Image (cartoon, rainbow, N blue to C red; front, side, top):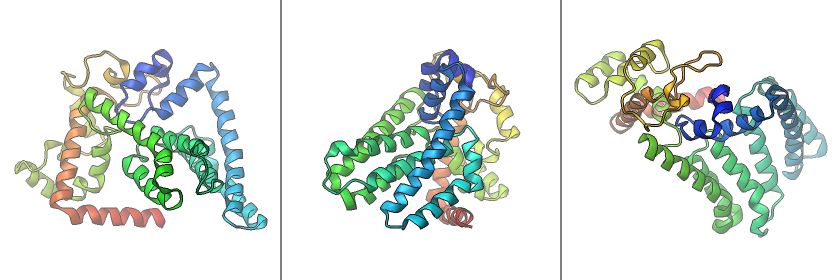
Length: 302
């Protein structure tokens, strides 16, 4: 999330020059900040989301054929789960995404195969909101969702459902490509991908591959750590990114809390190198990547 000070001072410019994530969560934060009582507004919003999430799970369960008793049991389990209680009181996009997912599923469960396209609008808005909120809901996710929905609704209605999200993702990607030479909805994609590719290799092998110029020097740095931050932040900003002067690109730290600003333009070359290195590993060491993916799924379902 961009710093609240920046979102208050120049919300549109801050969101426009944010290359590290889609603008949805920052847009919501800007609206809450505009009330002047953002803490109260956020608390009210999240408690409303919590209440309606339980109702949504209850209605969805009934629609899927569960009895009223079992629907209440399932909704109660969701309501009382420790992680749900945590996210309901933590201002982050995870709880909002869970609410949107349940809302979209509840809407789709009530729509028939031959329903008028206009009735798909709430679900289409929800899917587009997910795409705007988090890079996890990117092109691959939306396309996969579209493939699943096509079984029930056919391609014409499916395009009405996922088309707005695809257009939004395309617009964000085009903006990042033109401004930052990053053809992605998030410039962090390479750095995140390096965790299950480049950094699965031993340090000795990474050093050898750097000497061979198969990998860049970034492969020797541990992303999101001090030995990664210091060399990048010590160097001049140069001509990286657009020439506009804006805090979200130029400030090394956020004014609220003092955390490092990973949207700083100095990080852009490293993000690009990380993506190049990760793609090299996928092409030339596919088993390393696949093994890491398998392990990740194991952790997820443990």
